[in-house]
Image: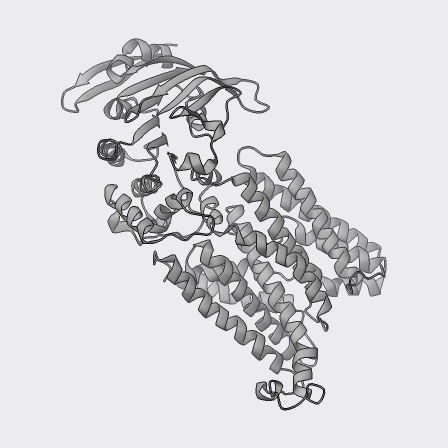
Length: 337
Length: 261
């Protein structure tokens, strides 16, 4: 399939396959848990919702968490795809440009100083972490705008790595000053968790993610061309500066809102895009939507594993993404080699 | 076809003027070689002609219209660029790479149709790479890659091709092959070409006209036989050379003998 020139067919087949997978994940994941429920009972219209315990467990107790996993997985996977193409570096990830570190610093500050406020039904920690990611974005964006000539991607990459180190050091310093309970809370937060029991935070996070997705929608073909080199893309008619800015802002917004919602969950943004490329080829018009759908399915599956292996105790989902994603990715890589 | 009118260029924060009051007219259908020592400004001139850079003074005209007034997309429909080397970050197939040449002809969300595929396949045929269609670009040899990139430029359907050292990273056989391909495309497709190169013999075999640059200014511009001369090579490179017509090759041959300055 990767070699077929007919992009319409490739797109249709990939969307159908990955779309089915994502839909199955969203429908089946809420069935698993301490109380067994069935889809037939959940969607039994003859029982009113108030009396349908299965439907209540499905929609109220478990679906928010599954939707959050879908949203975060899709956002991180798309951000990974975009950063890898933009920076022409297969090792780039949503964390590369310091956005995750900014989000982490925001959260660490909010936890340590016991910030207690809410906005639009969202609590202080996710708000602070989103603000942190926007702060990091502004720094990176300012750097890239100031340094607009020649091979700017390498400079951007170095700036991102440096910013990550700097922000992480500040986080570590704040944690060093914090007391035991706060430190434990920040450590837990930094492992990532999808334990979200309401629709409000998801709806709020969906707003910046929606803006990011609108930005991503403009990019796929441009990313194909940019991945071949900025100058060659420009020679083919791409407004590279504009495309880079749309990509940078969209990918950072997606990452920032994902981290604010669920904490930093590693590995999705790097493993999912490469896995999808191995399956569907390099064309970003297929890779980008397929990665969104597969990222959603992947994180739902990982969260499911995190919930059930040591039930009733939960594993941090970030541990599971790496434990499952790592070996699987290595296997795929060396199977092809 | 394309004309530079007394263009000057200095890189931002650069301390040296790279091009100083350079004028150059490239006629439609011509193959023009851009020669000169390292740092003479030939790559910069090529980037001014492609609109990648904008001159501080003077202007570049594409069929009489200032390049600065055209969009990137509008330029790309008429001007294609072939770099010295192309590296694909991801595993695109050869046909994928060539289809990217159709980008300036498609709407923002338009996918390539059968007509675009047909154009891409014709470009593969014209460059002798049809058999590579499904191969991953990264697995090709340097010579094959360069032919595929030229096919992409053909698919772009531009009538001006700007080539930056198109044969510099190729071995002898591929150099000959690439030069022959460019000559053939110029004859069959009428593509105008501006070729930046260090290879005097390749330029002599390929080009109708030569522009010789030195220190950011035009040293000589004229028919190949009138421009590749012992005196000009001496003046541009500071090298004593033997230049004579090689009957078997059918063009001038340059043998550098000694550095004199």
